[in-house]
Length: 261
Image 1 (cartoon, rainbow, N blue to C red):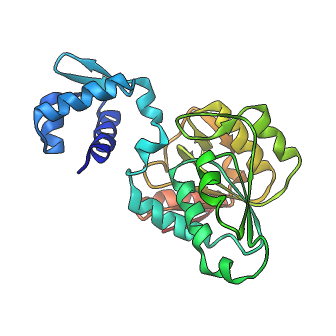
Image 2 (image 1 turned 180 degrees about the horizontal axis):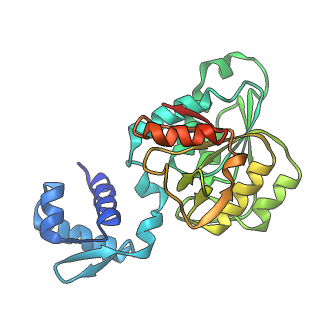
């Protein structure tokens, strides 16, 4: 395990537990206490945690980790979700994508789908996004028309937010909006951690004929701070096999089609 992977896992443990001692972290990570002390010190310098005597406690930002620290969490589930979600987009369609690890995987699958390369149409698909990293990855794909919103980027998610980001949705329409979320419940709908991101995601959903929420099992049944849309606005929920059948039934009864990848 390299340092980046170790930091991913360490921040994940800390976010779940709230606090860790050096000894406990070393045991759970199967590394030396000296390595954990160095990791804690370096992460504290980046304001990713708060150092304490003998350990560390979760800094407030640890619950909204920057995208680069999230990529290794539930990676296989997210890749399966992305593959199933990409199948919902037809060649020639206009797709909205917000930022996040799961939607980034969706963008990668869309960019490499063989049938999109084979259409001969230009563009084979149009993607409207407020995520800088998605725009950067797809800009080199000649068969993909990439449209970036304006706005001010958030370093946690690489998402552009603010009036310059929401304003574009007065000028465009979408066939499908694919939204990554921090939580989704029948009662509260789709939610995320940041209210500025929620504003952009909400406008994206309003302009789409179909709304698809992508969420691995850790996010289903949870709610976050800022509301994106009601459950009634969600057409499809794509998740993984860890979600209980009872939760699937609740969404189905609410009129949401659930796809378990």
